[in-house]
Structure formats: C-alpha cells, structure tokens
Length: 360
Image 1 (cartoon, rainbow, N blue to C red):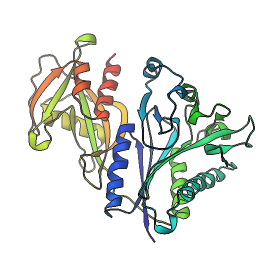
Image 2 (image 1 turned 90 degrees about the vertical axis):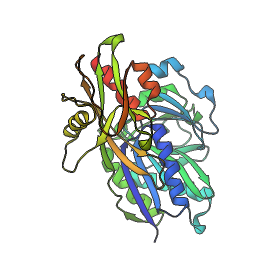
Image 3 (image 1 turned 45 degrees about the vertical axis):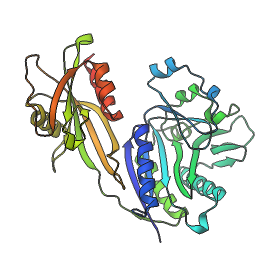
Image 4 (image 1 turned 135 degrees about the horizontal axis):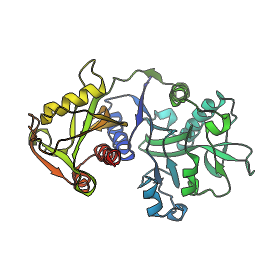
C-alpha cells in the first residue's frame, strides 16, 4: 500500500503555498516521497483559476487592499474563489497510479472525501453537475449553498491545488466576488450550519482519515518542522521609523533579512527571539509577540525543508551601535517601504508590517 503523509501547517502565505506545491510535486515525481496532503490556512486572498472572469471580482483593488485581501492568478481549474482564516485548505500532491488515471474519477474521489467529512457533522452534502464544489440544500433551489470549493490541476497524473472547506470562515469576504462565477446561490460554513465554532484541527483529522481511506493509502507521520523565530528591530516613530536589515554573507545566500534564527531544543519562542536578537546585534531588549506564526519552505531543496516561524518585534535605543554576528556582513537602518521592497520573503514582509502597526 502506498503512503500518505499529511502536513498540518497552520497559516501559510499563498505564495509560499504555491512554492510548497511545486517542491513537493517535484519530490513526488522523482520518487523522493510518497503522496502528500498539505492542510493549511491562507490569509485573505482571492485566486483566479484558468477559467476566471475578471468581472467576477466585484471589489476594487483599493477596497481589497484596505481589507488586506491579496489577488493571485493560478493554474488550477475554475473561476475566482476566496481563501482566508477559518477555512481549511487542502492540497493533495498525489501521483495517481494506473488504475486511478481518470480525471473524472479523481474529482469524484476528492468530492467523496468532502461528503464523508461533512457527514460526520450530520450534514448531507451533494454535488451539482453544472456547478463545481460541494453543496448543502437541494439542487436548483434558492436554499442551495456551497460549503466547499474544489479547484484541481493535473499534469502527467501528478495532482496539485485542491479544495477549501468553509469551517469558521469570515463569510462576508465572499461579497468581494461571484464565487466560482455562480450568481444563483450562496456560500455557507460549518459554523453557520452548526451554530458553533468548530476546531480546525478536528476537521483536519477527519479529512486526513477520509483521504487515506478513499485513495487506499497508509497514513504516516511527517517529520516535525524546523522551529524558527524572527525579530523586527525598529527605532524612531511615524515617518521617521526605521527597520534594521541584516545582509547574510554570500555563502549564506547574500540577501537582506530581519533578525532570524532557530529555536534551541526546549526553548520557548520568546526566549529564542531574545537570544537571537542579542547574538545577531548585541542588543538585550524586551521582545513583543506579533501573534504571527506561519509555515514555509526554506530554499529550493527537494523534498522541501519545512519551517514554522514565530514573529516578534523589539525597540532599539537611538544611540545603540549594532554588533554583527557571524552570519551577516553588513547592516542598514532603512525606512519601512525600503525594508518591504528588499525583503525577499512574504513572511518577513508580513512580520515587518505587523511590527509597524503595533508601534502605531
């Protein structure tokens, strides 16, 4: 029996999710791993499939930016859809065996996993041939409402992209779009249908089990991710605010970053952040939790090396002189727009943005 490794990643920036799909897909293609199911949450984002009609995005770019909603074009099937916190997104990275190499069967199997999961909550879901996704209520009725979206991609029987179940999703964000181009019906969530908050981890467990059963795979535990921290060190206020950027030595990539580093065994995230701040700059200071933890892949290795990072911020005294550690060969204090332009990774840019908002 082939294996299925399920990664429960928590928050993943959308562009980082695309990179994870790419790297795991290459690893699966090369036989370096078995089938993989990535379970995660995205920050608010609208994604446009290959069949997307731009007019189905109802909000202006300015309105989306004001709400912190990004916009991405993708190679999945379908029209426009929304991802956001409280929604369970799943990306199956499967190399379909010969007896499963049928596109319609693959779509039906993914739908079956959704039906079985929802049935455990007492919900009888259906598919509607003319509309993609998984639905509640009778077809061809004003009561029909979508609870799960499906947008898949296959290339030489390697699958990517996947599904999104509305668990505790902020449903008003769907007003920014015509979901999947369907104007005749609405959307719903487990929370709305059950009248209570539903733990995402609980839904993850059920989805993983049903994918293993439907696709006849043996569940195996993943290796734990590397735990890291980041610290946005700032000085000044308002338009005079500056962010410290450190340049990694050429042998370590040569790019600019904020303070980052690994957590030591048994170390709490806040302790690690304070230690890394001192080791990389020489500053001992209080670090503030930015309530931002996300997962991503470091580098372009196949299979990917997964990292889970907690973000912090700290204030630097005006007269403090930075003392570089061994990992970096230069530093600069730059304004916030410059910092956001130079930082190569979405997670680091998000950490800086949160630190700026925290400081007012």
